[in-house]
Length: 381
Ligand SMILES: Cc1ncc(COP(=O)(O)O)c(C=O)c1O
Image 1 (cartoon, rainbow, N blue to C red):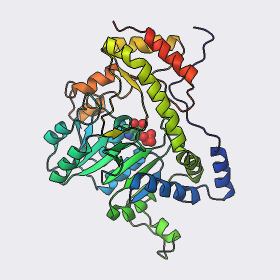
Image 2 (cartoon, rainbow, N blue to C red):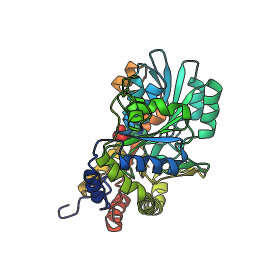
Image 3 (tube, rainbow, N blue to C red):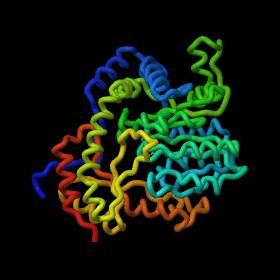
């Protein structure tokens, strides 16, 4: 259809004040990391989530890599991950030579199936990675029990879920480690960025060193040591002040961003639920014990053909809807780790049948209603 406005899947949130923040960072004469804005964002996150320490990083991927380093993962170690996740959840730890053990997800929340975790955990398991899909919390009570019984660390990959809660407790406070993403697709963003959240005091000093190329540079700048030297392995995971300034403006406005996203999510749910029920299409499920951050709105169609037909139907109207994770255990790399197609049937079905609708801060009601009207025209085969 000609003349219709394109509705993208995502548009990065831009509030306006970000430019002032960036100008200020430049005026401060400090655009590398660990300056005024970085510290402000870290303090803000520590208070908002309620963790012992937050470190801004260059990405969520890098924050996950730091978890692998802090755990001293090595060949022979295993870690349990959902097959339904982003590659970084696995790669970041596999980089240390540890072996991923893929488990399936629950068909309701699309989160780690905690009973499948209980079956796979063993003496080699060094970490269980709980990915809170769409910021809806995993079954943290049960996962916590399993981890305690086996002396295994929990890493919360909370790339989607800043401000999400499980039984009233913020996501990011359950594991020894948690990670956040500020990639442009996330609710609060700075283009590319992330954070490592620490709940164990004992990890703080080493994390700071790992993030600073294995040096005690941060201690030196605080005047705590008189020499700046190489003390450990490490890498370059510090976020630039320019990005931290941008991020700080969005963090301060997170309630305004959330309020708009809640309205978008609720309108999708309200207008699509009756249509979805009639056609056997599954919409997001948020258990009563979870507070979600309204990060995603997805539909699970009965078949791959239906999903592809819906994407094409929306594309004809200049609307961009996209699928999500493809089963990692069945990918070429996953199979090198022993994964076999058929191992995780729920994940495989989601790879084929799930589609996400346009969802971003600046999505106005007229454009959203146009998306919904077009979806409502669609019939499964
Ligand atoms: C569950 C999950 N973990 C990690 C990441 C990686 O985030 P980043 O792009 O900040 O490295 C993503 C990316 O969207 C993700 O969906």
